[in-house]
Image (tube, helix red, strand yellow):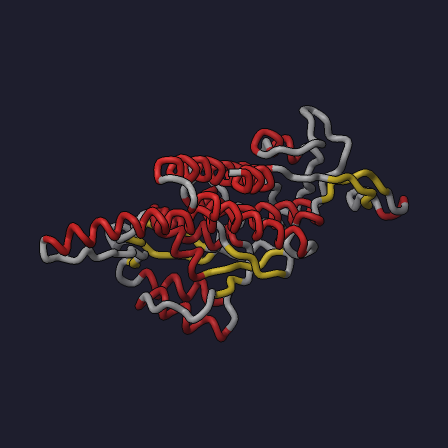
Length: 324
């Protein structure tokens, strides 16, 4: 299991580096001020093809390790993988809870506040030490590194789980065939109660390019799967918060929060730092399944207009603030 161990170590270890960075918080009239700041660009998919490639290779080798393991040990390794995935969930919960709103500066103790050093391994962070500055650019790069690792881990779990399902399905098919029946697999998806999908679309459509608006309407009203992921032209937590409000008000039925999160991952992506970003399980779980109020710039409000039922109201866009 040497490759499995190397893969898991790589997922959890963040090689934070220090570099001279201009502190943009200092008044411009005093001239540029440079300080030591955190850097993680060498472990992001956009700035380092080597990082992305190594992560892919380690994942594939780890899968081969698991394929060769007996079923009992395989379950144990998958259990460890799911525990690690929960750490990514914890990161996103802390991140969204503490990310500053309304354009406020990120404080240099941000990594300590979100308990980054308690969740993942690194060689730089120590309790109560904030000599290095934390810039919005660094935080964005850190999120990209987190997403890439989380997606890789989710893919690893999915590939290994397929092995388990194939074995279980073969057993079930043999069992069902003996009784003259074939098992049917059902994937549940969100269904909007009457009138809500149209209201939701009217509020939501302005966040999508014109070419994506009809596929969006078809997805919301008729569950017609788009040919490619629909790009939400704003912060991902705004989209997630909107769906969270609907499912908690029981305006979306027929699926659980976890199934809703998987559905969003399959059909949507969002814009962050002028780039299209995928939704991940931990990112969505930190918003939709968390009890903490996350989104500081919501798109809509659910209005309880009983006895007439519920209605949706658009919230004016907040041009300040920068959330991921």
